[in-house]
Image 1 (tube, rainbow, N blue to C red):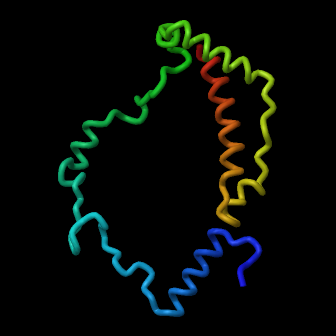
Image 2: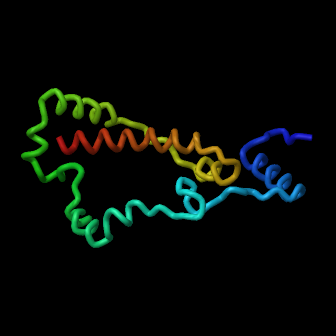
Image 3: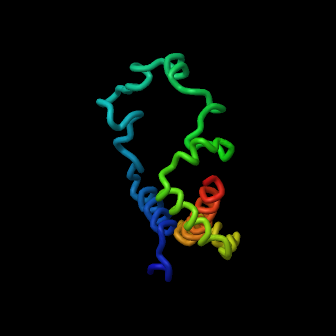
Length: 139
């Protein structure tokens, strides 16, 4: 019969067992590029842009700055006062933030049964607080 907790791991194991018992190929229509016509590969990006051309178009990783650094006061001071106030109040709300623990058992739930919801919730709460504190410090 069914196990008490029927999760993704049990489903995949049962599917693989069923496929092997009945000699059904796991992926009968698999091709190198499923979007390409049968027997062809598309490589649209490689044809349109050579690696040399792509490298010339990208800025070096060392120069990539999605946000100004904290020492770039001119950029942070140029933010509208309403944005600065919102960033500061969000950061101040996190000053006494109690950081939730990230136990290994929550992290390992994904490896054990495919559940990553509990880990993601804790990670997102921590990440939001860190983000709020960082932006408030920059402002």
